[in-house]
Length: 147
Image: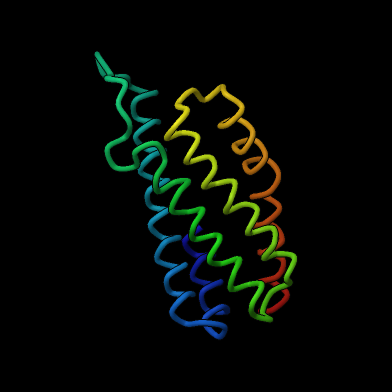
């Protein structure tokens, strides 16, 4: 996702350089946080320690970077997409939807904690299987057309 963020930054900096850089930095932080979060979970699943305390990941507590920061980055990208003319406006609206769902997912993981509850499950399934893949597929096609 970091390579995509850099490519999108290159296009969106024509609209607003400072906000495009802000979105790029937030997106990179979210991507790195997501990799650390996934690596931590994978390491504990493959080779579980003798006792794993039920504490949040110290680097990405409750998905702060993975969902919260990445959602804000996506929201800022969507703002730039809808303001500029480099991408279709509909892509920006889909980005808004994905950003809001990611932040809702973070808040659900922060407040509700139980991953089987609807407050966590609904945004996770909706964004993970529909909105986010559609956004990145459309974004990829838009980047290919303009290259």
